Length: 402
Length: 91
Image (cartoon, rainbow over all chains, first blue to last red; front, side, top):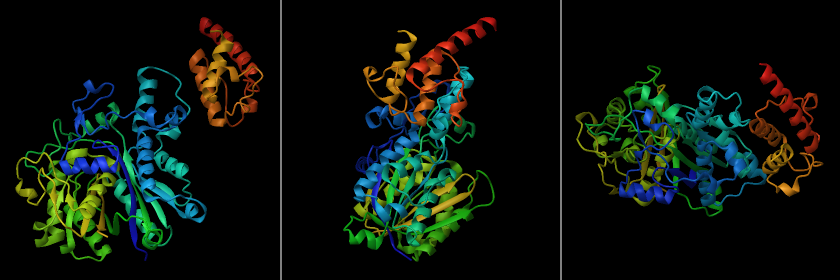
């Protein structure tokens, strides 16, 4: 089996339009959640989110590209450009033939659906733009990354709700580890912050109207975010031979299905994914210094996740740090694990643990070190990235300092 | 703007060219408009003139709408406007 390292990272999210800006916001414990701005927001009862503000598509893409790129594709392309530029890789010849793209998204082009339903149902129009289908399809972002960077190997989109990007990265990791590909571009994106997207979430009654406060006793729900996180996963010897700057090593994945309930999380399913990742990485629980929690800020997730961490780590659960950066960038649904992987990289590489902000009251059911409100310096060797999705589908990634 | 100038403006925008680069004898191919650009052009024409253009990208040659050149497109649009106006006034 090959070793797999990360040699490039890119992002756009409510905290910043680059990895550097996102790291800075995470270090400062800055909140990117604010008032939502889009058409008909006044008809929503949930009016906050981690929206990417001040973003001008026309400054990034030409008219023809915008006609084809939904917002989730635009975010993906910007993050991919940053990640691939950092890696220094140029894809041609055999490297291009075997390198592919595996990205996660839950909803794909949600605002394209929304805009065009609005046009035919509300405005009564009988004609839509010819590119509606290629714009909204879930694999649009993946395909455009492939086209833009000449990536001709195995390429597809993974859709497992809130675990989409973790499952995508698990898949990309397996492909590089097995020797199938030397390089894979992976991560995920989401952009459902539009009237229909938020209205659908409202229906579930799990959204907070004021803030995302993971693990805090007074938490009252999740807050949606948007954006993308994209990474370059590369075979270790390949990266070393060309003198690449290695951000971290991917050492294992654990995946499980609760096979129980379509929305309620399961302690046992989550535990199996965590222990599966440790086993796959060949490490003992006490080597883990930090977990980027799924930490949605819902009553159900946070207590179930805390219990699963206690089960998986035993006494060491009290020694490790676990934080939810969703408190800052919101829940990016299918892209969330990718943006949260950045917090793991920052912890391993810079020795800075991103905080759980908005933490106000300890909850005895979440009695872990959640790094409340203020970032912390710590020297850790191994970090985990948790994602536990609706549908009971779980994916945990393990990373090591290099 | 008459129909001819409007069509030329739409096609120029689609081809990302100046209006002066598009003449009645130009073909869509010579202007660099590919199959995706073609369906997008037809969409803009339908929107601009509030008409429905009979066109199936699988068999463009079977369409009643002649896409040979800018001139035939203009003629086709004029015919459709006349026909569809009549249909609307009858309907």
